[in-house]
Amino acid sequence: MSQRFVIEAVMVAIYGQLLSVNRPVEYIVPYTTVLELYEFEEGAEPLMNEPGDDHYVKEKVKELIAYFEEPFNKKKIQKALSIPWAKSAPILLGDQIKLTIVNAVDNAHYGELFDPIETEVLLSSLKEEAPVLTDQLEMIQRIISASVPVQVFDIDDFEFALEGTAHL
Image (cartoon, rainbow, N blue to C red):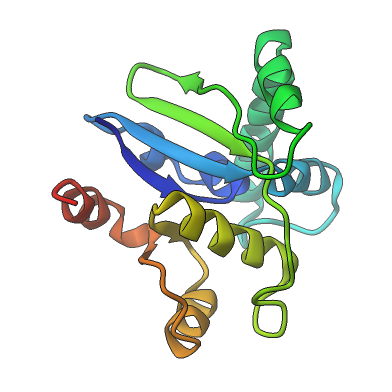
């Protein structure tokens, strides 16, 4: 059985360690975060501080967009978009990784403390009973302060998260 995490699509592109695992992992990705990839690809604002790193990450974002746009994967995603909270069939990224796109719907449940995408990540985590994986320390602090009943891991603690959720 694979370990599951809710994550934003851009983080899958940015953090290579998420794709080089030695056990099955499923990333549950809210669809609006897939749409964000297009904004990151087209935007002039850098994703990374170093120009070389920024160029590399933007290339990875383009690669992920292209992968999602492959006809078979695009069909899986489009099918999930017809019903709120529907999930796509798994999209495989190598032997151990699968992505599941969820048509998350922001119902403003956490709207005062979290932006719409963060809210969709949290609601997806609650619905799927899967931990959130993020690089946003401020978001982690707000989750803890608001007592949102989700498990959350910093991406820097990914190996620990893999070990920690293996026994759940």
